[in-house]
Length: 313
Image (cartoon, rainbow, N blue to C red; front, side, top):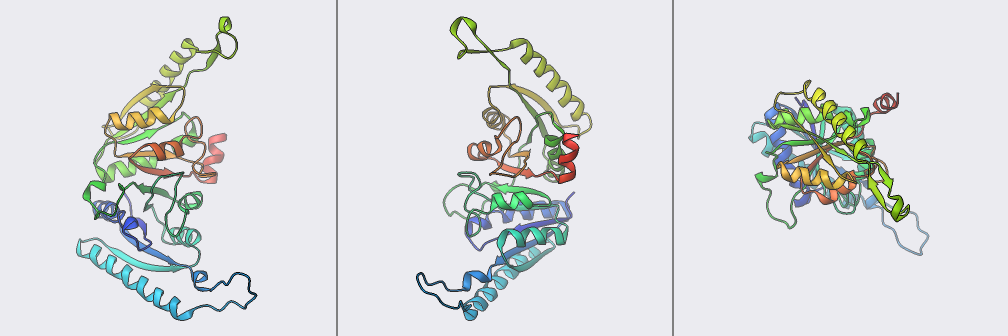
């Protein structure tokens, strides 16, 4: 179960849509919910194009923003406290990504909950496109809330209720997500669904030239059997409501998205290298495609350096 959850907010209605998800997880697990905002003082140094001036910080504007952000955080923490949640509001100062990452380490966060549009990779969170950069350095799993468009009030429908789909590629690196997916599923009282995509090796169709390809059916059958046996063995070590399935396709992202829709999954949990967007997950660079193509929330985890070394051992 979670003990410490971090919820970054930027003061916008869009970021606030992560509040009910974080609140639900905190309430069900008894975790402390740390609500933070980041104030970057450099934003209050005026810049005049074409002029050589000694930059002077607008201290009055900075202090006004500091006070407003602090009051807003205290208000959110107070409202969460009224729900029986142990919550604390903290205003951080510095650059956004670094400040959140350092604070996550400081409090020993088990999970970070934040919103994302999920367009063109991970875009437009918190004064710009920083969610991808944060995942690169996050010390824990990151839960990305996927609110619908518009500025409608936060809805309880954002709180996951369906299965947690866990795409795996058979590698130790990919398996690093399993622990985090189990924790989330237990907190939500949701079933786990392990899933692997078997991608056939293509062989040339000689009569039609080297450009025409045909799947190697024998190899594919072997892949499917091997994958199912592996998932079944893994499921035997997980909660009893865990299911397994193997799909077949020439790519990985599409069947993952289709599988999530077919089982009514509310979350897709994946391991990621967290570089160049969300790169190199499940037989290729598909995490970004899943993020852009699936409406579900995502639970992402970047394995530690030690875990990555073990995956290559």
